[in-house]
Image (tube, rainbow, N blue to C red; front, side):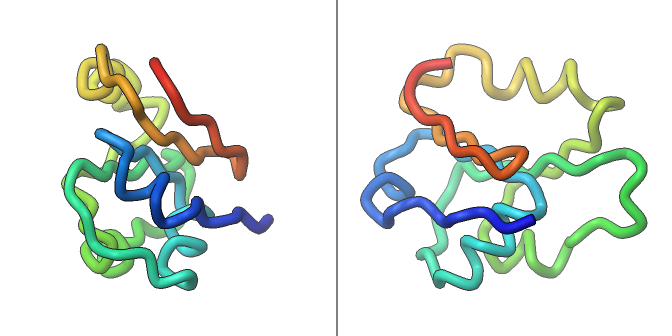
Length: 95
């Protein structure tokens, strides 16, 4: 699966960014600038957690789903102008 990286302006303007591992790789390949308020979601069944890649992208926290779904919901609750790239589909706007 491949994901497209968002445009740089969208990346920078979002108040919060939620990425999955595929999107994380795409953002790194497109050399998007480091920014704050980025979180990563991974699958509990994943064989590895991409710590090095996450640090390079400025990820502040990794949520292992479905175990950490409630914690992720708390983290993104009320986040306006969020950019969510999960399941290789990009959604932006209000949560």
